Length: 322
Image (cartoon, rainbow, N blue to C red):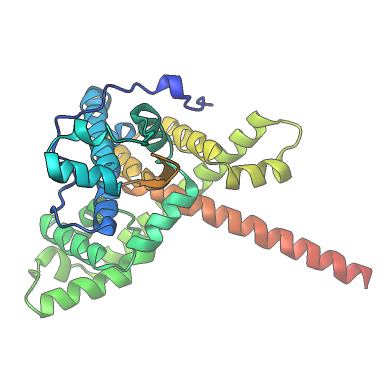
């Protein structure tokens, strides 16, 4: 089982003070705090080092530090005002009564990127949003109507759950002339579609089983004697255990193609974290991939099944007493 990430294991360079935080987060100088937060979350997801291939780790690490530092400047009103006035990020760090610590801030951003709660929160905000609609249509165009390819490009998407909803988005765009009626899409036969959906269902079931097995392995490794009850509660609520679960699942998937692996990692990174002077900083992200979110959904499904089974057992017990 992969070890938890400790502070000393996270390499933190000096604050990248030569950046333009607005450019790094791709926001205007007039951007609102909510817009800055949203852009930060996407950028952090896109550039988190855990998402990068081994040869790109160093580049991703540097980029993630720039993203985190840009957010440290723009998310704090006083630091942002100082930067706007001086154009110098170093000046923004030298404020009276400001106990901001870059190393601590960065480590918090880095570690809090993978939690079950933060992934769920990010998914709730994204699903059904105008941003998701844009991403669906952009991916549809890039894939030239190939839906299997499109799903690989749309973060948080699930072919089994989203097929009908995405078709409404695409059909409306085609009808209004905002999307091309690619033959790959319009000419897909009912048989081809059924086979495609069957493949997606089988893959989802396989991932659910893998996620449940990985969770059980983590629980048993943590305390072989207590097994389910205590370990289940901890696994549901302890972000550290969820980090280990995500890492273990990645490890078990190394035999897959690089394309599938990238698809599985992107969704990991949405989160809330603390930073600065006790204020809350939210860390998380951008262009994710399917499998991490698919696994998160699989774990939620497994949790729900266990809860339903337990409720049924309790109900049966009460009936016997009567």
